[in-house]
Amino acid sequence: AVFAHGENASLLHGGIEVFLHHMAALVLVSVFTFFGSLLLYKVTNAIITLRVSEESEDIGLDLSQHQESFN
Image (cartoon, rainbow, N blue to C red):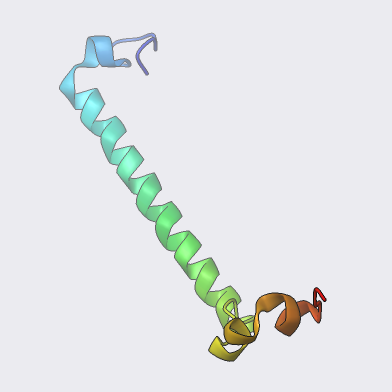
């Protein structure tokens, strides 16, 4: 946006108004991305549990998840 052409099209010629529009767009995209990712996480977690149980952690993930042991 710094090098855009046209009246009020760039930060250099549009001033604070263009800057605030760009900041609003950045905030909107950030919020959309955060909540979209959160929604996808929740849906995936409802279908497939994403965290192992505390028992599995105590046993060790190599053994509990992959049946691997290093003897």
